[in-house]
Length: 401
Length: 163
Image 1 (spheres, rainbow over the protein chains, first blue to last red):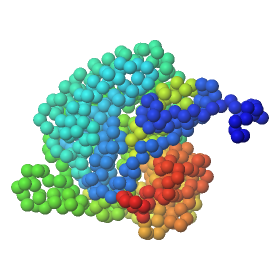
Image 2 (cartoon, each protein chain N blue to C red):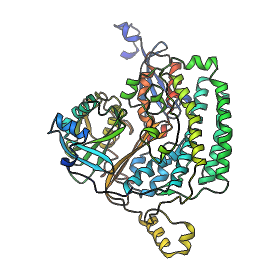
Image 3 (cartoon, rainbow over the protein chains, first blue to last red):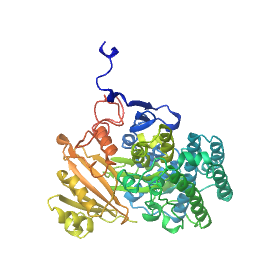
């Protein structure tokens, strides 16, 4: 019963700090993130994230699937922007195969990726503002997100787990009325961003909670592997879309918002500007959309159109072969990185020459960004931890995989 | 773009700045190089991996650790191949460092001293592949429960069914 003794401890200095458990069921941890905080009064001295509560072994599952069967799994990694994950995986697989993708498919991919970036940032904005205490912004953001989910449903039949990008192109050509719906959304969207900014950007409480909170210097950001808006808000001007372009992003004109402050406010400002820039890119993709096929000319890899499959014998044979045996991929390894709404999303695929990947590894941006949380929160108040978590915009699905 | 055969001859690649820098620093550390699908991989002897990272970082050739992972080539020996994806934000280029590890001696030096971001990545590889990292500050399981037996991403670990 030694631990029940009422005698004072020999070293009172040992009694000054306390370990506080935050999560995994805490609403402002955006999922099942558990944080161990060592606190002195209300100040955080140290913080350690504890993850793995959502680990489903997707990387292991991929090894047992054909290449085309992995696409639906990638949706589940980052459920706020499934198409961006599809894109990263199919780009990596296409690089392994050496496939040439028709321009129309590439432009539709760019357009949808940017719409996904908008819908992902809308979830971030709504939840971030709600964490700070501004409840109503959430409803405004989800109003526009709903429009976008309808657009995804039009094009893929699903609101969230779209699996619309396939190895070699798109699942099918967009339906009638799709481009009109996108245009309608893009036309009203700038007004809506003004509306969010009206609610937040001049809001005294919001500014006080965000400004000069959770600083991250450029050196620390690079050392800790931070990417995406969080890196750009720390003053590092790097964006894969512009600097290491993929999927014909080099043909689009857009600005990369940066800031030198490196605090939560800077991250907020960068992301809100990104909302506007993404809309610009999507608009350019819509207006300059080239005509042509949406699938690569590779019958052994790309499933034939339904019409052809029902009328031509070769198409039927290829369809049967791809579905039952998959397609073999030349041996080798690739690492394909793209700019997801959260930062650098990378797929590392090793092929051993069979129809199933030998290794699929996802480098998820939230996973690396999460490591910077400790640095951001050291010496800050517990209330600032909530603001800092919101500012790095983590998705636990891609952290735990 | 159609596939072109990979260049695996170190002689043909030694003029590339990254390969040249490593060769100039230590010829024994570089075991080979490969240019496949426009991606450069450099095979580094495992005892030099941390110093190789430091050398490239000090020379200003790379500044960012994008990704760190492992692949299991079971039943081949050496069984594991570590892959370090390094990025230069300044020069806007990537390189992959690789190190081969034997199955019965899966130990490599940690690079957390060079890039602190390697912390989680190395813990994950330790957890899922069972590779030990010397000098890692906190090498514990990350994804799996602490009392889990085995390393799920090894190729001899079944995907389904009871272990």
